[in-house]
Amino acid sequence: MKKLMILAIAVVAACAPDTRDNTARLEKKIDDLSKKIDGLAARGGAGAAAQRPQRVEPDRAKTYAVPIDGDPVDGPADAKITVVKAYDYACPYCEKVRDTMDELRKKYGNDLRIVFKQLVVHPPTATAGALAVCAANKQGKFLQMDQLLWEKGYKARNFDKDAKCQESAEGCPVVNGFAQELGLNMDKFKADMKGECQAQIQRDQRELQALSVSATPSFFINGRFMAGAMPMENFVTLIDEELKKANDKIAQGTPAASYYQQVVLDKGLKALERPAQ
Image (cartoon, rainbow, N blue to C red):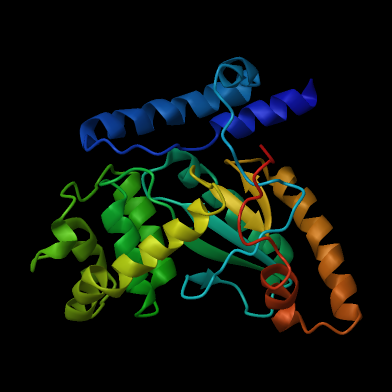
């Protein structure tokens, strides 16, 4: 029964794609989902989840080669544990898991880094934020922009509602204001949002979709999949398993700075294995 409850919460504690261009409806959904999370935590949450069809997703026992080139990183390059986080800036579950990510960074220190990949499941509401944080990263202000997008964007329901604003000369007013607050070069910021960051976000989405990741937040911990805004202990259990593996490999001569490349990228699965028909 306990395993069923955990699985049930995993199914509901994530945002599925929303392709409708209806910001007001999305904002109401965000508020409603935030309330439901608290209710599910109190009741166990199994009833609502049992009615949902299970999504095809990566095998949690296997290791997947998730590319991270060009993605923002919080933590050292030689960290033994790489947590790839797929998220968007309009997902209530992504907002709720932020504290857990901060706790993990404190608990594991330099043994852990977080790599941030954009998976926009709420266009257009989250689109400008995804592009803005990419552009800010190119000026060394990823973490600062990330904080503003959550604290002054998401929590205030202050989103750029025009799906095409990043293509105009004026840019997107909400994220432009955040960029000015951070003292960014505005010409470069707008140019990067229109250009390189469009390609970066599309690449992130292709890489994640190749592994059938379609909901946020989703995580790969040294290549092993976890879905949803899970409790701290769920992350710790998996991280400790992977940390033991990493320590063993490093003791045998694998450089810590090369561990993700040699063990996860070189040996991990490049795509989801499909069952034989």
